[in-house]
Amino acid sequence: MRLLRHSTALVAGLLMSASVMAADSYNNYQQDEPGYFAMIGDLVIARPLLLGATVLGTGAFLVSLPFSALGGNVPEAGRELVIRPAEETFVRCLGCTRAGYGRQQQDELR
Image (cartoon, rainbow, N blue to C red; front, top):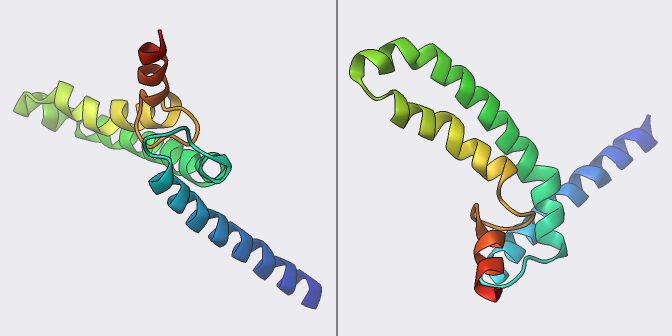
């Protein structure tokens, strides 16, 4: 029991330190290529949270659809609640801070 408590604390501490390092890497590599800690933090922390935001946003969009249709803003609601979180989850390169970062950099190299 004691070993389980210590190992749980160790894993929690490692995850917290990785997220701090990932946040620091985001700031350092915003213009350059993302580093190791930015990629690990993005894979372990950000992507699962963004996937959850995409699922919740889709549910919220479906619930708000009748009201959005009455107000005439279905495209805007869909873009903000579903498309933007989905782009950040699936289109953004690993460790990048903005969607399309990798494609813009590759286009500049051509």
